[in-house]
Image 1: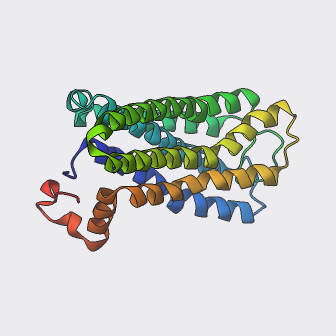
Image 2 (image 1 turned 180 degrees about the vertical axis):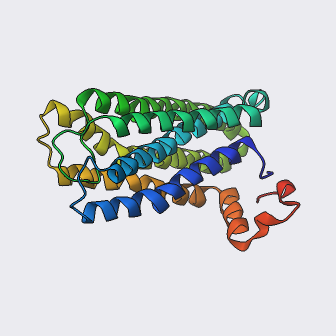
Image 3 (image 1 turned 90 degrees about the vertical axis):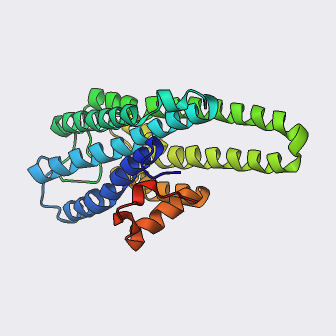
Length: 262
């Protein structure tokens, strides 16, 4: 597998979003949270909130695009190279980041509710909270769940057809594929579902959910950016090979674009 492939472009976009969450959002949020004299309307708090929304949304949307890429690779392998090429992938990446920026700026400029200091979670109006959650989590989660379920069904069908001649070898492959898809979706849903449920329930319940509980769920959501590389590195040898190339400096070699990943 060459490094310059549509899938690797998607993985790079996801890695950039997850890395920036750790480098920008977390330290910035902790500093603003500790320095309590900064109010929730402060410019720095607004900027932090927008960056948070942009990067987290970009990570989620990139995961959604990766699921679509895997769908065509598994379910339509013959037409995969035509429908999912480098040009299409670049457009999808650009759209995902553009949508994330628009949502981040929109939510960042909307007024806060019942908040006097800059916290890890900013209470927004009910309309902006619900709309943001729909476009940045619930719709992508529905797409990912449907796509991975379809992939699983196709993979099991293919495994059963081959199992007649391959025996237990295909059975092991089927179990690994099932486990991989289950963990990818499980980690994503476990990390973000509690937070986005609170985002939708908090305005309806007149903000009765304790702020520290919502902040804890926000931290859990951020952990998805840390867990994504761990999941992909554990299940995909080519991901580990690419990571080794990066940390050893081999990625800067002139012929790296034609390098094959084991």
